[in-house]
Length: 318
Image 1 (cartoon, rainbow, N blue to C red):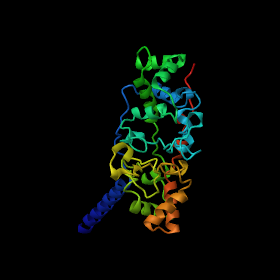
Image 2 (cartoon, rainbow, N blue to C red; image 1 turned 90 degrees about the horizontal axis):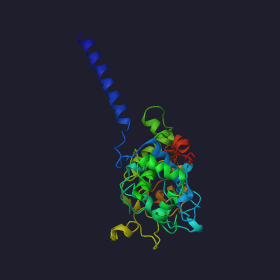
Image 3 (cartoon, one colour; image 1 turned 135 degrees about the vertical axis):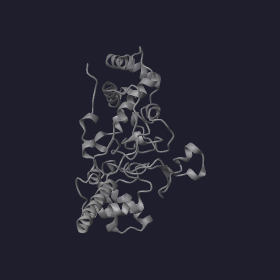
Image 4 (spheres, one colour; image 1 turned 180 degrees about the vertical axis):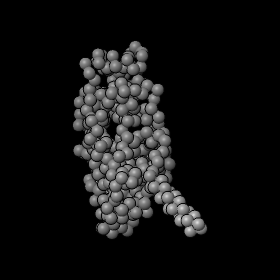
């Protein structure tokens, strides 16, 4: 009888241990910082998506938001180191990925915008980007039958106002959630890492996770990563005026990092190999360790997100 009781206790401990390990492995995502707005609906999402892809928002109707944020490249800009605007003007910073913005506290590389709703104002009005004014944008939209009808249907008011435009754009950008990569499947006990990928994850947890914290693989921090700073762009310092912030930029997400090149705030590095060589010198990582880290970083690619037809080009129906 005593042996039977001991056996039952043993089995129970095994099951408890298995359950703990499984729960320890499966990661829970934090709650979003920015919830959906009161006007969130399928219609407002489709309106925001249409606006995102429409060059009508730029001063000369030549570029759209999607010109610098491509769906197939995790909504980043891979054609040039820095963003390109109307009239072939060149910005001073790389257009970052728009993935998982609902968990961001500040926006843009220097954190100069605190609101997900308001973050679209800068690219819309910056002379080196879309170069427009909000007044002109609203006038153009009001003169467009499809947009005028869509805004009235959703917001139940005559006339299109700035807050409606920004709200609609947020409906789309807040929907760009990426959380179905190979890494996520491993965390859900569906698949397993290769030996190289597992080694890479161990190295990542030792050296990188402080700033690029799982499961989002970014943090709402501003850091200096040891690259040579161009005196024309002092990063976070330009917002705070604090000497301690010279050369600091927001920590970018590493999700879909293999598709969102070039890297750094000014796009100076074209490949992950260059990036790991830079950090490898700081962290004294061997060539093999750098390759293992790259193998792990590639597990953060979410193909379903990149190829999701609900995020691709869209116009409003007539």
